[in-house]
Length: 196
Image (tube, rainbow, N blue to C red; front, top):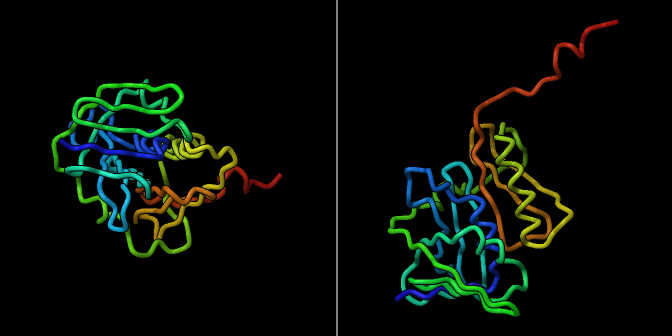
């Protein structure tokens, strides 16, 4: 039996923002993936195929195999900084703390995609892509869930079509990857150029 222990449960709540919805035919993207980090701790990963969320809990642990697990939204809402330790087993998820909470957990059969291949070595230092506005809005939730209310979001990419890195100032335990929707040239509208 696999047991996942997460000491930063807010990173699981953040990851759930970027998992595929229930209606997505790619069932293996409908949860949050937990895997051992090479340096110790746990990587908390999710993707909907356009966005990728990667969190790192250096104190987390996995006994057994890496796993992908979906948790119910009401339970996810309880995962906040300093809310206790999250323990996920094959039949339930348990949050310890002042107000312990218990929930069902849905384990998703492998395979989770090789998410590392979409993380380029070099992102450049410009943002040239065009992005879905609702996808951008999710990044304000990342800061809120982690406890940062003043956000500086930085998005950089090598060119308009490549994956872009998303970082939020002051949050070292998380990063995101965002794929541009298409190549669009940004210009001032023609109506602005009309002379009086």
